Image (cartoon, rainbow, N blue to C red; front, side, top):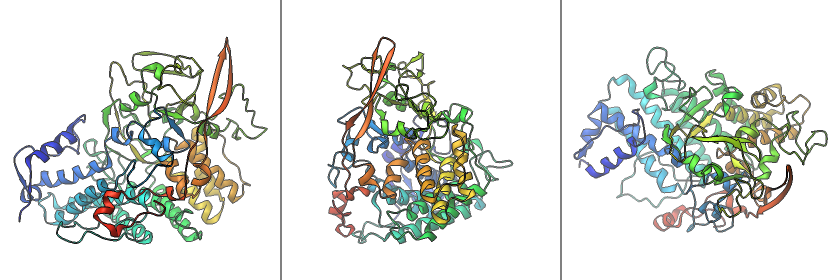
Length: 558
């Protein structure tokens, strides 16, 4: 029987697709009236629109930048959320469980998997025209299926693979597939996407939308590079200690090969250090720039500024970087601040530091502006303009996050900026390659070159030969911590390295700054204690899902 899609549902979809967006490929074509399967697959416009809407599972920018007003960074040693009652703290205080979940994407991802599978099943007999474009569109659907499975895998580990649509009449009480099966399937879908998608990268095609790159109206679609980048990240997770306790070197080599495939496309590169701060602001000339491999659709908003700008500038100041993260930024001479020869001065702690510290984190006395508010030095000392002691939102650590924030945005009055969530960028690919290759064969010249491209762009001197494999591992991990801060990597990196009980089961620190006259005094202090036990490497399966499908079984410890 033909399935009828209720008019109200599609009106709701239209609102989701179009709100705050300029006209782009994500706009769904249905307007009003009941919509049948024949309407969808018998229309070029509607069939394409079905795939377009499937991209919405990636989340609009405002959703990706906020978990109840918090970033996932605040559930790692990167940051503290200034709202002490925020749900993000459930991940830190030992109360996380099947009935008390945060960032639960279980049912959500399976809904989007059903949509992508429907497109894969129906598109071969649809009237998409020209028919020659169907394989490339199917490649995009394979990419989305891989992404949605990966979003489940990185949270829950073993999952039920959804490689077809399920009917409500069949038995859905299914056991989860093994990790090996999950990784094999996601990898295969990435390979299918790479083979079928015509566009190599998101840049403008030289002749047509599917010749090398996309035209302006289609930017944001999956590309060959995106499929390869997803496979590279997947295999890096699979090679890491949590999933590879026996340290099977062939897994590391496979991960290195996958990252090298992205590099060898020769389509992506690093933007300059000057442009790095604007990487996430698509009101600039950096729209779908060469560092960005894949990003969500860019949506106009100021949510990130409202939630994270310093309180003295009208923001809520939610994401407060920790002293632990600040300490990870080296000196400009390339030495860690713990090195007696680094030149680090505790009385002037932000002098001669890695330039990315100033790009990613707002420190005391650094200059900041937003919207119509004039630039001024930030005051995070006790009683300062951005550390008013009676303001419950004032920074808990002595720092505010600068990354992602557009100083051209406005809070009051609101000035919106177009911003995506960047899922994959070239800096990560280089660091993925360096890490995997170092684990596979040691600190070769290729390893050095990959990590040094990121370091030198950031403003640090290149690492030199002579490091041991263990020393190189430490430097690469620190480089990831700094370069990829606040981008959801640290939360999962520490887990895949199986270091959660060491790194996350510990206090996080801030910097208490007092100022008397012109003299400021800096004293690190413990902001809060954190709890991490062995069960917290994976998310709990929501109890509501277990009640419906007991064969899933709960992740260990919950």
